[in-house]
Length: 259
Image 1 (cartoon, one colour):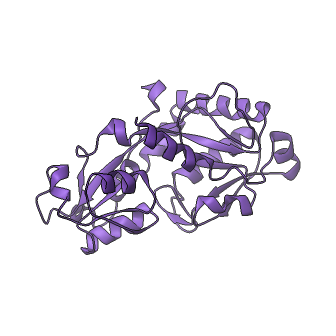
Image 2 (cartoon, one colour; image 1 turned 135 degrees about the horizontal axis):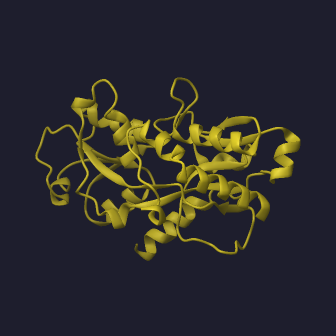
Image 3 (tube, helix red, strand yellow; image 1 turned 90 degrees about the vertical axis):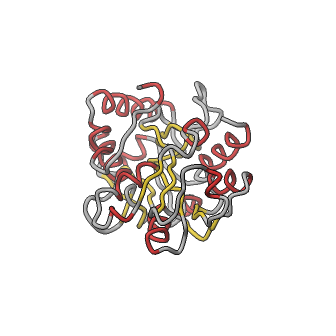
């Protein structure tokens, strides 16, 4: 992993650090475990519809194991988390493991999933290598690692998008020649009506450059709460509950240490 990418992932992981969250005793006193999630970002979360999304399912699992009610505060962008006071964000990129957190305002659990990125198109033109993308417009989330990396490598990018569903829709409509989305989102779309119109090119992007483990971000927490949630994640990895939740949405890879 390059130093520049590490810095970008670190910034992504820290955007929620100012949120006013709670330790486990405070959660219990308030009768709830509250997460922040996007209202329309499948396969990760959605306000309406069933299934509700991987982050929502994982949040419910953790809340149940904590013996607490579960609630969601809906935010369109995670940098807004400081305004609403959630206890956790269920998906945060892991830069490196921290044995002794310097601050308890923003602490990651042990990883629960491995994530990556894939290129998607509709097969209208030959795209067999990254060089072929240089003559096309590729949809990516603004400010994402894909945005920075492709731009640096001379690939024209279109950055009006915030979520994977927006990118996939633009590609299917023909507004974009191709797009970069998470492998989990591509797996989810393959299960949906109209999936035959989308081609997933999962060998174009270097898995070392675009792959990372995913953990839960606990906000304004303490050592006891972190240890409790870590124990839940480890137990649910061991019994297959997290993998089963992931496969419900079409794709799941265990974190690096679990492979």
